[in-house]
Figure (tube, rainbow, N blue to C red):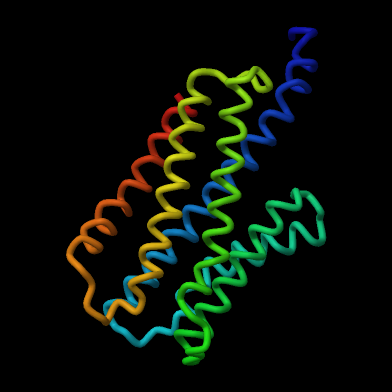
Length: 201
């Protein structure tokens, strides 16, 4: 056997562990997102499922993120704050829709989400700007992905603000607003997907 085989295994073992960890996180995130989409469809189609039940997969992710940040302390303050903001928004939405707490305005409910998207946009723009001034050294793929992710975050922020202005959806909405929402929603997904493709190629 090769005498350097032991060193090769020792060198690639941390890389394998990180790959498995990333794969498990991605798989769990994809499964929870898919389950949330199914529950959301059932709520819209049947109209009887509480919003809190639809949020079960998201509850698992968000509460897990909060506990990981508080107990394990493996996250930065901004990431922990983002998890807590999302949790706050979900609680307010559940209280408003499931329990009829009309004192909670929709603009107030989406404010934490807008704050999280603002954090993401500023972080991405900071990285892209840091590359321009030479503080970071990004590859062409990483730079392209950063720009696309920044555009996606800003577009998502505008979309959330527009949707919050027209809530509840039972009241009449102008055709221009409907068109804007229909165009921007897939645009966010498209930009995010293109950013993921750019950074992985």
